[in-house]
Structures are given as C-alpha cells and as structure tokens.
Image 1 (cartoon, one colour):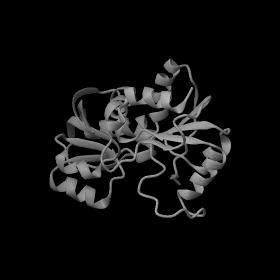
Image 2 (spheres, helix red, strand yellow):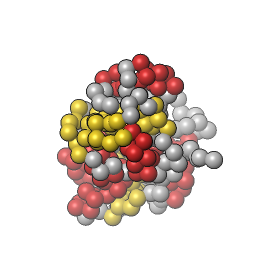
Image 3 (cartoon, helix red, strand yellow):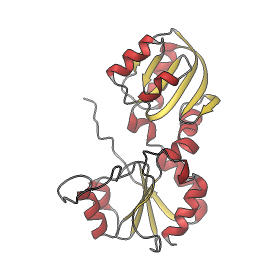
Length: 240
C-alpha cells in the first residue's frame, strides 16, 4: 500500500486541516508514492525506535519530529541526527498531533482511561461530570495514569466538574470553567494563576496522558488491513 493511500485514510479519520496553526502534522519524511508493508505507531520518534525498525517502515507518531523550520542540517544535533538515520533506512514519518487531540485522544482518555461521562467538549478542553471529594478524585486520577503520586493545586474540597486537556494545557487555564483542570506540564506560574481564580489542578503528565495515541490508532488501522505494531515508547522522565 502506498503512503498516499494510508495518508488519505488517516485524513478521513482525523482531518489534518484541524491541526493548530503552530502545529506540523502530516507527512514529514517520505514520499507519497512509496510502497509500505509495515507501520509502527509511537508517541515520539527516538533513536532506539529508528534503530529497531526495518528499512522502508512508516512511523506514525503523535508528536512531530520536525516542529519549526530547519535552517541547517547539522548531523550531530536534534532532530537532524534522527532525520539522517531515517533517510538512510528509508523510514517515513507521518505525525498526527493536534488534529488527533481534537478528534480522538481527549475523548478516549476521558471515557476509557478515566471512566467519566463527558458533558461538554470545547476544542482542546473536554468537560467531565465528577461529583466526588477532591482527595478521592485525585487518587483515582493518579491510579488511572500510573502516576507515583498526584501533584495537585487544591482549591476545592469537592469536585462537581473537571476539565481535561491531554499533553500540555497550561495556557488554557484562564479559559477553563470547572472546579478542577487535568493537564500535563503544569508550571509554578500556572499553579499561581489557578490559585488566583480558585481553580484546582492535577498534573497528569505529558507522556502519561498521551501515550494512549498508539492503541487508539491501532484499532482503526486494523480495518485498513495493514500490519501495524505499537512501539514500546518510553517516558524521557524517570521517578526516583
């Protein structure tokens, strides 16, 4: 099957035109006319993944390997060091980032991972019906994402509704209309902002909240008749 056919299927599943202006989803490395026999799904491209896959493999990733414009190709610097290896092995890459967040990832995490009912969706923010004590809710969230602890900003003892944005959603804090906001990459000043508007926060981690990308997409690719496998993506952070 050619990359163009796979791309068309992915575009129907989660239109690339839905991506944010700052995003870089789509075919990043490869040729639409290239024939593909194996597909590997992963949240990111890393060196171990490139080394492990066969030549002529298509990597479908959540995060784009190329985000900004490349002005020079220095082979000892990221991401050119990865791109060089991929070209040598004829490895292609399609990224499905903010478009997939909007169409699939947030909804899946809300209902299948956390197990709560969605009461509203607003682009990147998905609202959940909770009706639980804060401590009970926080412990459930930590367990759902396999977090060693719940890193929180507590401003309410009881949570009626919660908002969810997988990945990094700190910039959305001012727009959230709920008792608690679940997102990753929460910074100190995000916490201070949330305090000022009486919004509770629970940091669900960037990798921890988005690594479900591959298992969601795998179910759809099976319908295409392609051999696809999930890469055992690793969190770049460790807890000691």
